[in-house]
Length: 147
Figure 1: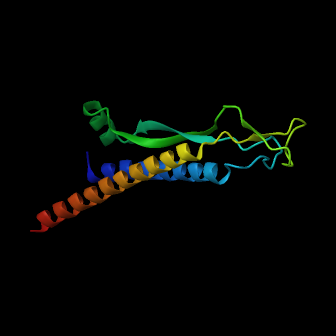
Figure 2 (figure 1 turned 180 degrees about the horizontal axis):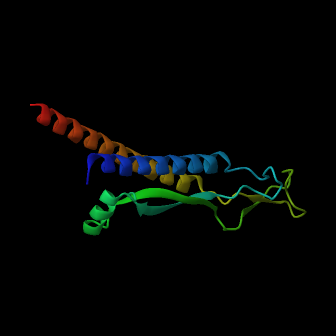
Figure 3 (figure 1 turned 135 degrees about the horizontal axis):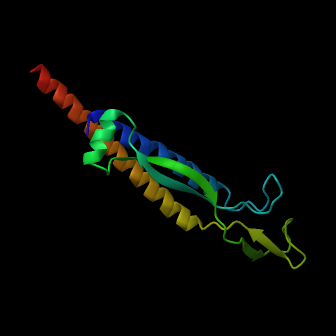
């Protein structure tokens, strides 16, 4: 694996984790949103789906993948809405309460979203460390070549 491939793989993971952090932030910001702009009811929790894709389709990469098929990048395959039903909370004074005084609240657990944010942050940090280590190895190799 070349230094550039290592950088490309780490940067794809960083981009994917950035998308995940944005989605989690949106979930947290809308934890109490009972009415969306389109009027379809409470905000629905969203989640990011990651997939692995081949690191490239160059001849060099195809040859390397023949010997190392595990060389993959991270790709955001999509953002999906959680299909769980909303939480029903008794609050008869709320403007979105039904005739029984129940309000449909988003199906978001703030604690779960915070754990997801910490996990995403750790993955981002790990990929930043891998990116920096790859850069350091490349710089060291260049310096050895000069010496």
